[in-house]
Length: 141
Image (cartoon, rainbow, N blue to C red):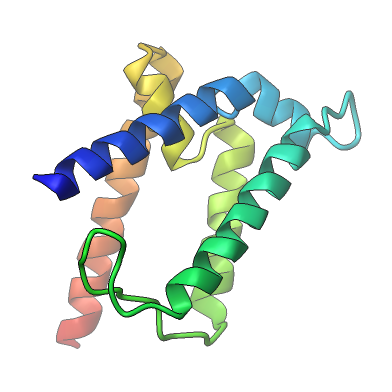
């Protein structure tokens, strides 16, 4: 039960942060990505803050074997940068630039009832399904 409440609290804080920062607003995100036009640099500060929090969190997590809730820590072991990672990042970036959403803000906007977010989330789920089918066929081969 404590895990569920902690997850709910973290999700609420994350979603609220996305709304307050403007990350759930695709026009704000697209304004940030429009470096040749009316560029809006405000999301760079949001990202910088998120990166600083992440650096501290990963530094603390790297020194622990158990989470604050008592669960085993499972840190990523793979540090290899390969073609699949680069192509995945490029695909993510192109999708973000087209839609103005990435997964977290897309789900927040869907919860707010935005139709564009519903289309984005449906496409995201379809993409995840296609990826899973491809990965399963690769594993069999």
